[in-house]
Length: 116
Length: 112
Image (tube, rainbow over the protein chains, first blue to last red):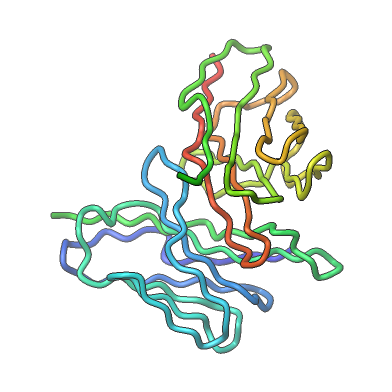
């Protein structure tokens, strides 16, 4: 099945620094989703991308849908302590017939720690 | 407010007992999902349901069962056959048009 490779696995940064993380797929995706999960909570959808080359922002977060449709990037500018959490990328996981039925494949997550 | 609720937030059970986790959504989504998350790990799909009265096994269905009698509800039963049930369980539902999946707050199950 499809696999998503997310990197880096973890990041330790100082408050105010910018953050970059990425996700690569072994096959083409038509949608890329980025989630943030805080400790003890469910993931929250941050940004959804639907077109190759698309660049979308949500406050200090910016995500891009790679031109090859096999990768996506998430950047966080001027990090603050509340950015701490696990960031997941995800995309539809089609079966052999090409229909995902809403199922998603998730990356393993990037654990972000921000030091004040 | 539209959203997904899971109850309880924390659940403790003795080994060998079945336990049912609740998931309710008022987003009018057809599809619902159950995931398991272990410490430091990603999300693994247990079961999913695309429509009422229908559900399919995910990647780690052994030891779990589900029902989907109403569109709004998708309860998960962790049976005594599940060898390592202590984990964080997440319920989600999907807007099919956009493939955007929304999650509940999770239930942390601890089996003593």
